[in-house]
Length: 152
Image (cartoon, rainbow, N blue to C red; front, side):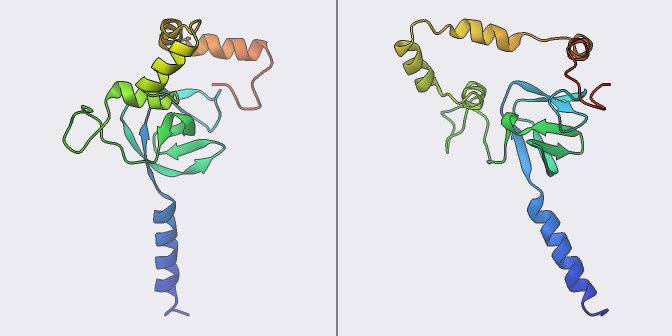
């Protein structure tokens, strides 16, 4: 039995290491949440290019030691930030942000040409808007949208 203990421990450690990943933030900024819920209180802010070691996944969120990050705001892919002209390639902050929206500069230009009514400046202005977290929770409470334990 004692001879098997090191093997069991090694298997557990390699399993834990296999589930751990590093994620990189793809958007200008995103909230680190207290729980794996979109309406959970924010415990901090993660910014474009910031890296986090994950402790697992839960309900569409990555768990980190700092809080929960929504999976749509991060990637497990290895990224190099910098100039697109850098030796060996790389991506600019603008390219990473567009990719986070599902676009690149060419796709956005092509879409804009085919859809004259598309108002990209308005979309960019909406992305810059921020809502006070206390006001958001008041709104959610008033509408009965908070689940049990979904408040500060």
